[in-house]
Image (cartoon, rainbow, N blue to C red; front, side):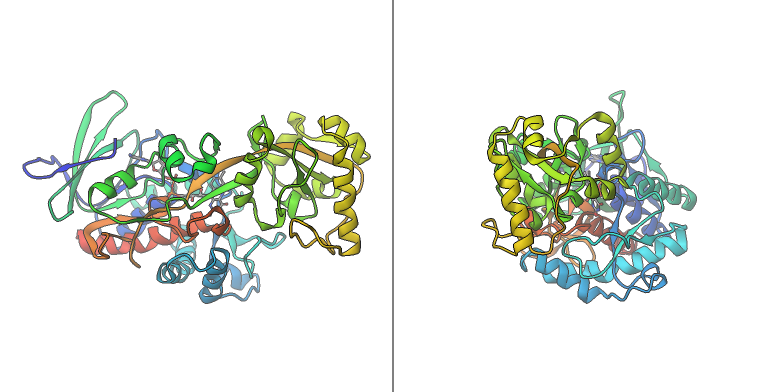
Amino acid sequence: MGRVLPARNVPFPSEVEVLVIGAGAAGLVAALRACEAGAEVVALERDPVPRGSTALSAGLIPAAGTRAQARAGIGDDPARFAADILAKAHGEPDAAAVRALTNAIGPAVDWLEAAHGLAFSVIEDFAYPGHSAQRMHGLAARSGEALVDALAAAAEGAGVPVLCEARVTTLFADEDGRAHGVEIVRPDGSAERIGCRALVLACNGYGGDTTLVAEHIPELAGALYFGHPGNEGDALRWGAALGAAARHLSGHQGHGSVAHPHGVLLTWATMTEGGFQANAAGLRFHDESRGYSEAAAEVLAQPGGVAWSVFDGRIAEIARQFEDFRRLEAMGALLTADAPDALAKRAGLPEAFAATFAFFEHAKRSGGADPLGRRLAGLPPLAPPLHAVKVTGALFHTQGGLVVDERARVRRADGAALPNLFAVGGAACGVSGSKASGYLSGNGLLSAVGYGYLAGTAAALIGR
Ligand SMILES: Cc1cc2nc3c(=O)[nH]c(=O)nc-3n(C[C@H](O)[C@H](O)[C@H](O)COP(=O)(O)OP(=O)(O)OC[C@H]3O[C@@H](n4cnc5c(N)ncnc54)[C@H](O)[C@@H]3O)c2cc1C
């Protein structure tokens, strides 16, 4: 799949001004925006209902300088947000792309609220590592499913057709790389062609393609993929066939705390609030404060590809606000004991675990150095009841992709933009650099909603 054929002499029974492939957050925002700019738009989605990885996410969009922040009395601005992104990824992302996204995302969130009734509020009771201000915007349900449903409802309200069960298999383009249309295949195997004047690739990255994952993120080859399985790297293949540049393909968001074998996320608040991870030998193996994304490969590198996340009753109470945590409790994933040696017994860990626990707690109290580099002084102590959950590492989504300009136009290797092709969300190169550690919470929906907002307007200008 993901092929490009010559457009010459290919008839298109119908043509639209702007065609969008994929109806997750990125595609729906791009379609809404293009419609508002006066273009005739159609979005194509391979699934029966728009869902994508967006529906699997927490639906939290980081944005600076919004009305929701002003209502909550939070001072923030795009430059500060941009600095946080660049700091997390050690300056690797393209500064112009970071600027374009951080400038666009605030107005995008305000516009979704004012024009389409998405009532955002800012998360204020939890600090996201690496963000110097409270800027995570979510709908009341705090779920990605609610976000994608609200966007799909907005598209319907605006009269944007979202054609579901329409998998795009082929792009048709001329020698200049201008896209003329696509072929879609329906579940019954029938094929249709649709012409377009501007084309927006919003079909996310390649997390659902095990071969591409093994090639670009070998440390997570064979790891659990927690994102939408239908994201199979089509944008990347089409882009490559059209001479587009791709960058940071090894960049991704991983997670080092997916309960095993339950396959349910255990919130990283279990670590940031003072817990730690131990391997099957009962030993800590990394600095848990660096972040959940880079922890995925650390956990997978341990014997059996698993670890135990250790925390206590106080932390469990904080974690209980998340539905996933409550599910884990109901599934019996939490082991509980009153002392470290008893917890070790329950988990089948060797005696070394009790020493690991004692050292960790002593360093917290005494301010002693942690050989793994974590700042332990001042962290709250772990007190009975103690809990342990067996976890593994997983891939959430890929962050590398097609290189785009400040309007989300796809660039060739020489830097020039392709005539009428856009890439948004996970289809575009994100702002996390080439490593898992460069992922700042929210970078996924930032490039979905931010690039969707920019591309929709620009594609309408080309398409009309
Ligand atoms: C468990 C989890 C939690 C996350 N939490 C967060 C979070 O809280 N904040 C955050 O910012 N990010 C988060 N992310 C990342 C975030 O979900 C993604 O970055 C974002 O949803 C990407 O949006 P998108 O529109 O590009 O892709 P998607 O939402 O995946 O949409 C792409 C759509 O394209 C369709 N498609 C693919 N190929 C084709 C084709 N050939 N033809 C037609 N349709 C096609 C797919 O079916 C899909 O519906 C999380 C991800 C996961 C997996």
